[in-house]
Length: 226
Image (cartoon, rainbow, N blue to C red; front, side):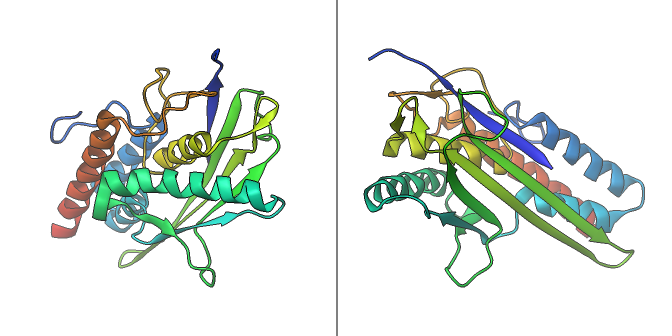
């Protein structure tokens, strides 16, 4: 299980072809390396399953649980969630694998709101816990991705704003897409600045995700051609 969190910063008032982008999370870089090693060790089906999970299956569904929120708060948070998802949809277009799940579909990702992110200090306002499951034989492979995104309802003693929710949601989806945390503000993968959220995606982050996905797809194609 991979667990990643976003923390707050309190305030007053690209990669060349074939290179691993620096912004990719180190744990996923290691996972990619293990997939490449599996292919070289004569386990192509295992490698294919692992690489497919790094891309996330197309149509990976996200469901949002608004239970426990009053109607006014739910309206604000829903707008923030849609904005956060939309940031990545606008950035990646057809390359965005995550979509809102229909009410009848079983979601791959569940997003829920909480008073406090469990096990985190007071600065942490969001977290994603993801699982990647694979099974393979000499001829076939299977894979499954699931995740839970937890978003804190409160910024200090007040409820989160739409822009703060959008930043947190886009940040956690950035983790799902392969990015790691950065220390600098002015990045969606940077810390949340209370009352001044970035709530947009830095072009370098967009290029990192696109480059990472190209790298994974190139590796998939190499294995499939053998």
